[in-house]
Amino acid sequence: MRVFPPLPPAVAALHEAPPDTSVHGDVKAKRVLGGAVALVIQFIFGRKKKSSSPSDHVIPTVPRIKMEPGSTYLLPTDKPDMAFKIFTKEVSNGASGMIITRLHPGEVKARFSVGSSPIHWLSRAFTKESMSPTNLGAVAEQIEGFVSKNNNPLVLLDGIEYLIVQNDLQKVVRFISSVRDSVALHSARMVIPFNMQSVDESGRALISRDLHVIKWND
Amino acid sequence: MRFYKTYVQGFDEALGGGIPKGHVILVSGPPGTMKSSLAYSILYQNAIREDIKGAYLTLEQSKTSLEFQLSRMGMDMERVEDRVQIQDLSRIRLGMEELRGKARFGTPAERPWLDVLKRHIEDVKEGHPFELLALDSLPVLEIISGLRERRINLFQFFGWLKGLGCTSFVISEVSPDPNTVHDEDFLADGLLYLTMEKVGGLDVYRRIRCVKMRGVNHSTGIYTLEFKEGGFKVSQVI
Image 1 (spheres, each protein chain N blue to C red):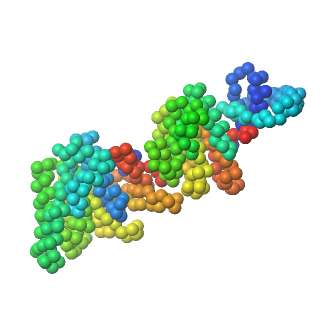
Image 2 (image 1 turned 45 degrees about the vertical axis):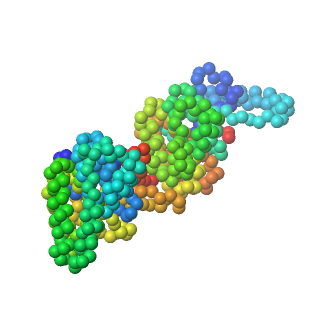
């Protein structure tokens, strides 16, 4: 399992090269050094900032990860917003994106710059854009169809918690395993936001077993 | 060997390319599994895409009712009327049933029905040389023709169908018990089994499975069968 620790924002500014968190030796060394500098900067300026604006809250930055082709990433989070941010960033950099989500497509378009990416709504409603949450085979085929026909494909698969409620955990684990294979086969990339608290420890182990878990500060 | 595609998206791959020419295929399943629609769709799609002639013989549902059902599904019968003939034998059947009501099983009054039907199909084929035939349905045929020695009579009938030189789809109802095996299951060259399955406590999906297809290395897996945007498609079951 590969782990991608986020870089503090202050450290990111020190990097001249484009962000890349591939776990290589030189990057690791930079990180250690950068982390130390960041701690000093935070020590000097952090308190002052806090006292001047106590109501400020931390807006999480997009985890700086390099998404490798053929890989599926699990983003532990209780809201899918960060996954959408990662998705929109990648799409703006040229990825062909597709979204499968519990959010209504209208809401997705209003809140995120997803461009012309197709949006499939996991819902029991009878609409053109909806996909039945219990027809996991059809969802898997939608993903397979997309990743096999597009260049640099990226899939955002949101709503795993809903799928577990509508089906059962074992089925959803089989489903994730199936779509992960499609992603690997076609050198695509996939992000799955998931609330780790929605299942017990064994469920977490089953779901995350073959996925790259992104570590970040939610 | 010539193969006919079903044009059910994703299913021809599972069948290993399609259905061999000359096969008698049973399309079995409980009510509501879209057996008739699937059989007609195969004829319809082959007419449109391959210019292949077909004949659909209905013994139970009237032609008007069938056409209404198919047109509601988006199939334009006028588009293929020169290639796919729907033969409505339901009225003839009703007449024969009246006649049979006055006779006893096995008497000459009921026996001719099967001969009449065979002769009719041969006549249709002469004027409209079809390659694909759908017969809807086997249970009705059995009832009205009074097959006393079922397996022998079915064997003869399936043999006659093969002798026609076309590929036939015989629609059959089955009991909900999946372990029940029927004579026709052995006699047919291929068996497509349709069923419905409850999923997640609230949803019911149609499933399709190719139980057998002689001479073809096919998948025996179960697929979800859906009719979407004017055509059938299958997807894997997870």
